Image (cartoon, helix red, strand yellow):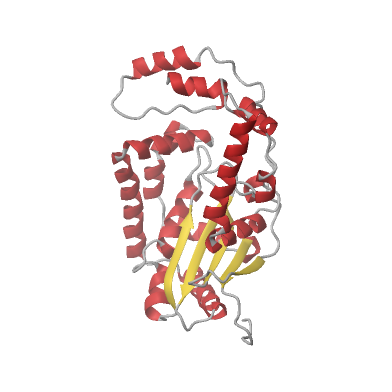
Length: 328
């Protein structure tokens, strides 16, 4: 704890340090994003999804901005944000809480707070009136696929009902490669896909995304698989989920949340993430109960609200057409 407290306010940063670390993050971007067509598509889709929110900016940054970062940029950011009044301290494991509190007061207490921690202006998304579409062709792509993301509400302090319903909806639609709605319809019944998934994470301060991805079978075009996907979603919105499947998914999701508590690291991560985005301890500890309380009506209300093409970005990841071959 002494080391972490020292690191929080006493950074020594030379021009050589900056030059070295700037190159490190550029290489990290090159490896994880620029050399990965999947990451490039996700980055472009996120930039299109968020028209006003900074959530559209990559976490690691855009390369041209990263290359221009200076020592002054780093120090200014560090001095503003790396302060005890902007931190959540999580201690997980077999410890004495009284002793931990005494250590925190001893090492963090004397540190001067940052006067830059003020209520932030949080730009909100305007009403989204039209679907955005993009395609990325890259010769490194081995498996073309369709991905679609929808603007979706986050977990709200004191009211996690919508987020819980969306969590269950993601599992219903694409959480299991054999029994989910998309898998059964596209991979087994129609046999037009080799993989499908749905995903959602509401741990954010403002609206996030709900996503779907489908990898077509080798002889199926992206246009065809997207049409089939739309038909499956339309049927689901009209008919709703199978009650037995809903009960099974709800039990599995809650069980997964409970089993995750067996890991000290997962516990620390759960509390750290939640508290840092404004959730309370009661919200975090009540999340599995919120999941178990989800009803079919909750799922369908969330599905009809979120699965709206006006709030969507649809991306195609594909290979460039060979010479003389027509683009789809």
